[in-house]
Image 1: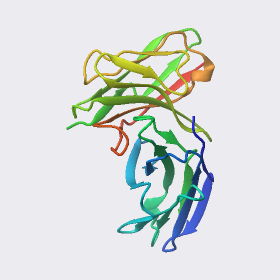
Image 2: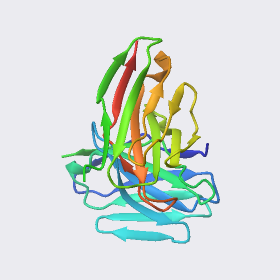
Image 3: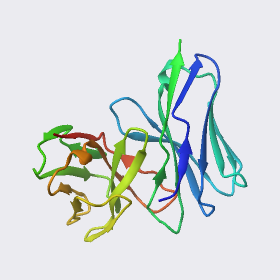
Image 4: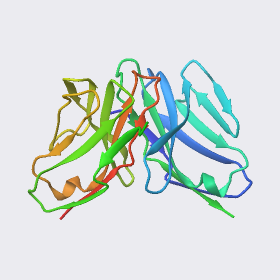
Length: 112
Length: 113
């Protein structure tokens, strides 16, 4: 499968910004996604970006895509304790259709 | 809508036993998938289906079988359970190809002793 890499852990203080990073290898990736997994639950889509975009903003979330470096980041502004969860980066391409490739997940801990 | 439902939530099996993990969705989605989640490895695709009667292998299909007789249901069968199949299993569905959101079930935590 494709390689999608993330750092495993991140801790931030409540109110600070969090930045979660992801690198991928497939240069033909069409869509890149951020999913959130809360303890004991399935994954929920947070946001996604099409590969011809550089940035997408949605309330407290900002996604940045550097296609040249194959680097995707998720910034969460004013991080709250409810943001503590595992965040997964994923990619898919038109070529692979419904095949998603997920990163290892980054466990975000928000310290009150 | 109930979304994507999975049963059971927890299961313990002995090596060599067989069982079926159930998955159902009520959103009339054509695409359904099974993933396993292991620590430090993210989610890996086991099998997927693009419609009733059509299934295909994902990244880690060995030891698992699937079928898709209806749009709603996509069961995953473990034919002879092995300790390496201890994992959390997620079923997902989506209405279309890349660019569509995948909706995940709550997961089944399986332990094989």
